[in-house]
Length: 185
Image (cartoon, rainbow, N blue to C red; front, side):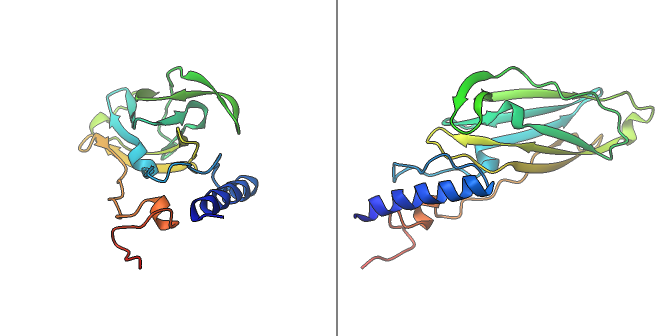
């Protein structure tokens, strides 16, 4: 068995173990050794903006990735802020091996969370917790991603921090190919 075959077999076993344990939802292992997966925050960039009557959520989804429409949850903190249900745009229908027929988003997506008018508009400060889940087209799904963003009249726009590149992809860390940092004999 070659190293590449062993890595593929390891990926299949790891995917099965994680899927049955409920940790993430890897569908199958990546088959191309030159694929570098983005962190979830980079693959599904989220920006929230506080407007007079709503919080606008905007995702920029990287090419080769998609976000599940029905895996998006938005909650307000404090819960005393009056808001309507989040208005999510329609998605594109896709058959998923794990979740069945689902709606997904690609590219740019804008959702609105309507807010009740506040008598002290300038003093309004809210935090939102956004949970979402998406996948890469190569068949790797991310665990649900949660972001907490604080918005106010003084700082009406916020985005979660995106981790800087660490110099190694997931495949590098698993030994699928030599990393520039490693020396191989």
